[in-house]
Structures are given as C-alpha cells and as structure tokens.
Image (cartoon, rainbow, N blue to C red):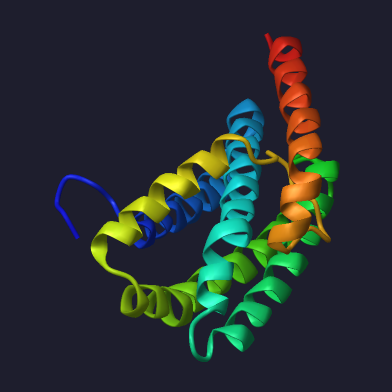
Length: 183
C-alpha cells in the first residue's frame, strides 16, 4: 500500500472507528448535540453499508470461501438496518431509545469486527495495493450518492443499484428540509 493513498480496507476500518466514536457521542450527549450526533451516525452507517453491499461484498463473494462469509454479514446488516430504522423513526429523545441504541451498538461493532477478521483478509490476499486503492475510490463515489437512511431489505448489490438512487434522492431531500427547519 502506498503511503499517500488509502486502500479500501484502511478506509473502511477508519469508518468503523468513526462509527465507534459516534456511538459514544450519542450515548453521552444531550439535546441538540445528541440529535446531531445521531443524525451523523445514521448517515454514516447508511452510506457505509450501502457501499459495502454494492462493492465490497461482491468482491469477497468471488473469493474461495467468501460466499458464507458474505451471507452472514448480509444477515447482520439487515438486522442492523431494521433496528436503525426503528431508532430513526423514534428519535433520540423517545422512551426506550437508549436500550435499543445499546443493542444496535453491540450488533454494529460485532459486525465490524467480523468484517475486519473475515472479509478484509480475503480482500488483502486477493488484490494488490493498486486494486485496493482503486476500490477505495469506488467506495467513496458510491457513498457520495448512497441513501442517507437505512432501507432494510436492500442488502444486495442489485437491490442497492435499483432502489438506491430513488431512496438517496428522497433521503437527501429530507436531510435538506430538516437542515432548513432546524435553523
């Protein structure tokens, strides 16, 4: 790996760290700070998982032994999207939010650890540094146009490609409206 450009594994691991950090901020914060941190968490989780589903999982699936690893990760992602969607609808001030947030945090962090231990080594073994860096660029591009909210049931590359663009438009319009109303 070159020192001036991140590869896809480093990019995703950095995002896992940011996700860990945001869970901590949401757990500790109050009021508007908590709401803002939760919105940041929802957005990051949503775009991160979409990019993994569209680009990373298909590459892992092609590797020897990759199919069952990807299937397990997709199941985890579906459960997390359902829980994140519930939390998003509730909002961080709702009764029961903290309990569900802890469950989501534990599930998401376990999921990230599974990716780091089972998927990322397969990618590192299969591809050279140049290919992994190109994959990082592709992930960034996918995240730039990905939905910013969870959409359970779209855990495949094909469903994300088909349903992702209209969902992203709606999500981003909703984000813009929320931003204006908050001023």
